[in-house]
Image (cartoon, rainbow, N blue to C red):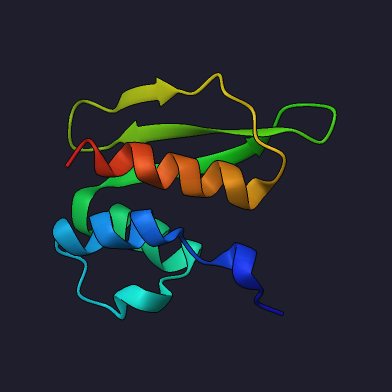
Length: 93
């Protein structure tokens, strides 16, 4: 079941719109934003488990010689890490 945590933050939705996202900006799911980055900008955002119920993310730019960005911040949930990764990936556009 989809909950509030499955949507990007209001600020992230605003930036998505500024960067050209054409979907329903007021209700963008994390998956939709993640997919849009992958398909339209060849940027992969991947959250992963660290330890002690903490998560972080990696960003891979497939169009720039597979440049890779590792984040060392830790988040309390997979969804928080994914939202943070999406926010960081939007800075690359």
